[in-house]
Length: 262
Length: 304
Image (cartoon, rainbow over all chains, first blue to last red; front, side, top):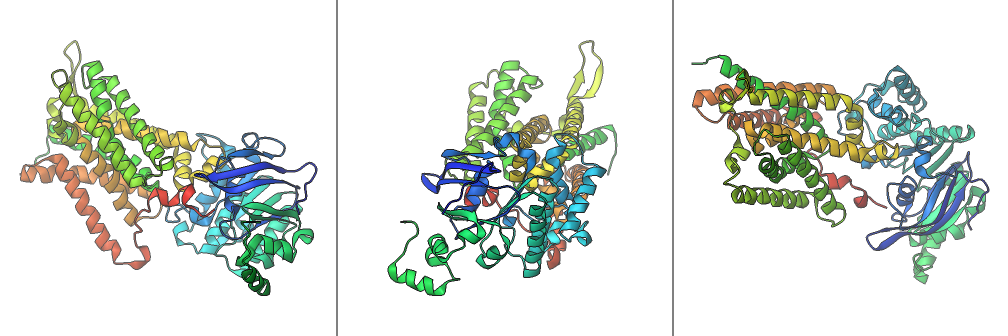
């Protein structure tokens, strides 16, 4: 169940990514519309983060290509923003919340130039959007997990991009923060930005995403939320790991269902 | 009896400058979890020094610095390559690379011993006490003063300029290298530039303080300062301050017990660090988290 679109903002063609000899993404081929809030769903180890990293050029695909805004990545870097997984950095680093958010402006600033008042204003307005104004001068080592996540999102906003790729922005985040961030992302999509989010809570995915990609090494589905959110496709994606549909899980166990073989 | 004459001033001044150069670079090496890579570089430059020495015929030649710089970058690249392509643990790849290059350097020194006035002792320990008699005398016979002091001034100026110019890039790539790459900033180049500066600083300082003290100055003052502050600018300033204090107290303690100045400087910095751990370690709120190894953060180790 893969829906292709005309004039895609992001086009992935026959992408294969392997670590050592074993492929972690098989033949992913999809295209995504612009101005949508897009979720990538799949169990642990399904290649969700790898897909994001392949799009951002952080891992080199074995074959296939990625086109963004119908261009190669290097031509459009300034229009793309990235939120890495929170654990990918050491939060003991000596920097304040403002310092980290200002980092989002460095790409447009270019080499050697120092950030000035303009960059500071951008950073402050982004911190306001994520509700972190009272933490501006706080050291990042003193933040909670949810606050760290908000800082990362603010830093991505400071890039002032058109396409946002977020790797697990809701990991370790409480419900109220999750809702607040989802509303912010919906607002951004309404303004014509495209936001792609790696996510694994199916409940909130159903409620918030416009478009859903289901991944489990292979691409299982890519299409509008209402078309792809079916029990069948979820079962295909999660196999035995799906807690949501407990009855289905039991059934799958009985039949020794393995999504890797399908 | 304590004295403060011109020689004492020159030695302390030069040692402070070297400590500041090393401390400035050491802060960023520490934040990148690469302190041990600094160690590796300081030893791996030896073959470069010997070859440069052999080509130029003097330890003052530009060839020596270029040779060392090339070897320093080479060592960095080999360490990276072993880790990423051959899947060797970071600490193992550092250990393998720098001992191999250092051994090659020692063999070269022995092979070329009849031509090269250089020995392992000098490279490893240095002797800053000889500084006042190692003068820079021009062809016309004018005495400019101690040569190593000039090297240290030039070194601290270049390191200071480098950090000022690339402060934003160094901070960003130290905190989040992937993010920097994604934004199109040349994080690999910034990294290699930092390694080159470390190589150059090592060579520039080794005659005075030796490779071992260079490592100590790269690692210990930043780690000590990081126990006291969690802000970057105060961290850098405190590191420089510690460097000056270590030079000053190291000199007078060595004078007091009539021992090696470089050795005493390392001892003082070690004692300062331990004292800081004991004082700051008592407050659980600001516990010092040992730097996690860099490979703990690398791409391939993260979940897919």
